[in-house]
Length: 117
Image 1 (cartoon, rainbow, N blue to C red):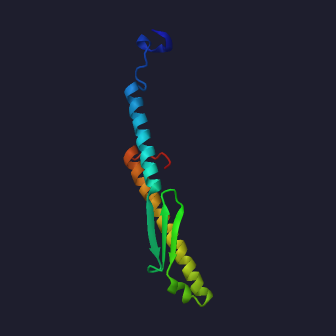
Image 2 (tube, rainbow, N blue to C red; image 1 turned 180 degrees about the vertical axis):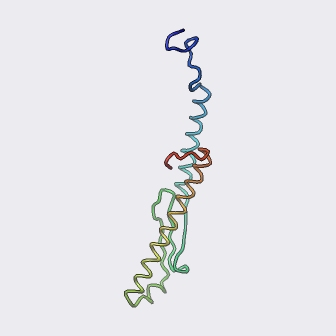
Image 3 (tube, rainbow, N blue to C red; image 1 turned 90 degrees about the horizontal axis):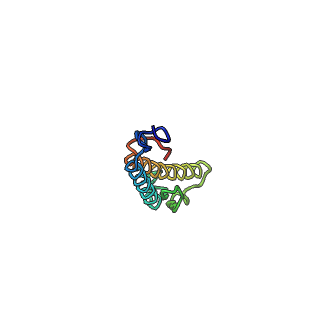
């Protein structure tokens, strides 16, 4: 047997060059998809459209719109709390959309393997 314990001194049964090239191609595609999704915008509304939030795929809040009527009519602490709850709901829903899109795209590329994306 040749050096390294492999017949002919070559690596057999392990990762061959074709597999390495395929893995590199997959990695490049993963990075491309991730960057593409990071640039996309995801929008959600809450409180019957009282609040609208827009985030990007990096999960950064880009825009938050509150209907002026919701603020003008907020005369009691309960009203202000309702507006706050709507803001949180809209932001969280937009973030969920971004996460789901990233997960779906990565799942397609990895064949469903959970790689922590």
